[in-house]
Image (tube, rainbow, N blue to C red; front, side, top):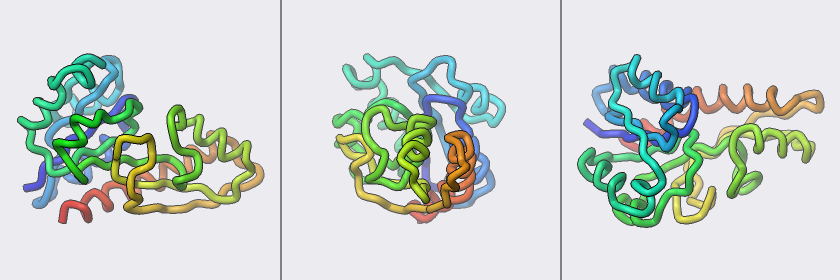
Length: 187
């Protein structure tokens, strides 16, 4: 049985989707969710779904080996960033080479980098009058949104679309494709 650990910072809809997708799988399961936000809604979702969830601070994450040691004890086959906003530290990436992936709400390399997450990305897509956008699932390296691309899915951006309209379209793409790509990576 393959083991998945999720990192999330916010509401946790992608984390919940992944947990539910793998709940009855014979191949993989989400064994833990870690968050940098002690007030993140993802913690409530995990409680309801019966999945172990912990929050940590910046010191435990990047200045000590506390989070790394939690991961080593969990022995994940894949670490999935699902709406996780902090840059992933090199000392963790070095321990889990090619085992950390992220979903980004745009077609990288467009609209990536520090500060480009959530509604900020969707606003940029609308302001730049893009005709299409989508999601990018990619490996995580030491730079924001620059790891090798695993998968992309596209959707149309209408002239009348607001950032919220784009966000809804992206959310649908994430819900449909993210679990399937994770499953494929683990098989």
